[in-house]
Image (cartoon, rainbow, N blue to C red; front, top):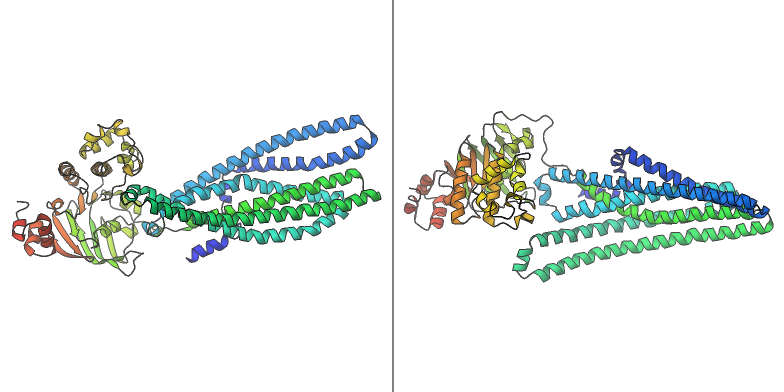
Length: 599
């Protein structure tokens, strides 16, 4: 919370935009080209009023048509130079903005994927995606057009003011006295605009987060006739975002109107004094015209800066939100000098007096002094009621979290001392909630083994008994399966996940209700595939359906974060404890008859 408050305070300035300079420095050629042509365009613009003065004072007063023709020719040359410089400035600036935003999106996404699951326990996916999309669009506008316009108008304003002083120090003093009356209110209003912009972006992210969640669960929404409720809730969120944006826009509009009134009001006042000087003969008409053009130029640049300042303020709010993500430190990191896991892999897993509570529920322990040893090649099943701590064991093996005390060892090495990537490389998992990406079947199977061949993917699919339905699809392995694999049945998605695990060919296999989504026929086929996959591998199986664990070397029964029973199916049934009660409920027979289930 303190970090977020600090980030919000920093968004009251343009400081967050300064974090983008390392990205700009990556592309010195683009940045240099933008600055060069920006300066050329500004200098060319500043030359025009001087040409106008000389033409009025020398050409018209002397009725010298040749002189006028020469100056008009020069003005045409300046116009061409200005046009070319402006076009090239636009190209370099916009290209630089697009390039920086692409890099920023890549870096933010890469950083997000490195964050620990604990971060996602407390942050909405939709809001994170909103930062990657809507906020980066704001930054692209700032780094591209807005920053370029700000620099251009700053150069024009300073250059025009300098030329005004050179042209008429007396008139310039009047303008300079008016500058504080314009600048100070702009700064004060700018702070309020930045605050409102940040609030609008936060509310928009909240609306986007809810929309993402509702659309992802559209079948559930429709099944419960809750489309109206969902629409009303999103409408309220969108209305809140609109109201925040409206307040921000109202302040920006007032800021712009105030700036233009003050700037051009001061120009009119100075022009009146200048006209009096011309009538008195102390100032030439050409000099007044030159001064007038420079003053209008300075006023226009200053007025434009007020609008650009508002846009940069919005971008600053967006940048602060992205920097919050980049500043987020992964809870799980590789140590400075990670311990190497033994090679070749052993395949052992051990829990030594492990105690753990999820960060979001610190007072509710998930594991209480768990001791567990799974030997290489052993097949161990873990059963128990929901909330007993079974899935937590998988989360700690994969090092999604670190235990509060005790050790989790893979191949004899404490996972906290090893590189998480090295630990996870030795593990294949088939989760209960299968993750299928909006890609082809080939890409989904090959997800855990990048660079594998088509033949490897097909072999894994055959081993998982998935090829028989894959070949029936219109494009076979190249068939796009839709978001979350919506075009596949539950059983088909599960077999894709099993093929993915087979292809990974890891020494440790984690199965979390791997056959839960299959019909009886598919379950038989996949169970046969899993038997082949488990051969020679250390396997830990989480199961609620006891029929899937009957062939385990050992069965562990968990209750309230502890192992309370251990043994084979027959020995546990004979004990008449928790496992026997679960078996009786599932098989529908008494304890003595359950003993005959696997005979």
